[in-house]
Length: 267
Image (cartoon, one colour):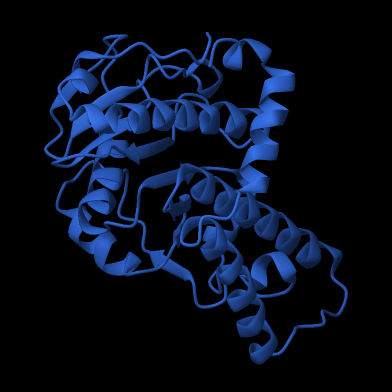
């Protein structure tokens, strides 16, 4: 499936000034799905990545329920509003109710959460089950010092009343560890949410490897960990706030173009 994106009914109802941004959002979001699969971070047909659409009201794009991540394209993304009403569903598959519960809550409460990315990787789930959660043991994980929230497991996220507790636990953090469940990142762009998740995943894998080695661990001071987090945050801000090129996201999309050339054939 190519990344050429015809206007959908829902898109045509928006302000013409937003249409180009919506087309770009569709391509980026579908690319994130393909890349999560390419990196082995997907979980069959489960977990979700959503993106809030520009324009009035709360509308967001999410994957059709039942499709694997490598099948997601700009054209088959589902458009849904904050109340769960499906506005556009090209495949007629609907959406995962748990995905709606988690993602709608965050998009409604956090204006800066343009993209929300959720995974169930082995490393992420393993760290989510550890009492101390993510530890600031290396450069990858130190970037998240003071930036990770935690939400207790309440069962599969089907109850809409869980949204209040989830949002309260998330606060203004860009990353959440869902206890006994997985990882979640919030980005001001699709690229930012993806890069945060990529680094969280590497942090979790490194932590498990360090723990498995059983050797004495050198733990950086809290001052160094905090400094490192600030340095990384400044780097993200240079891209999102100051408009610097997002070189890492661009590099990942080039990788996708090489490994999945049809995706960008007409984009």
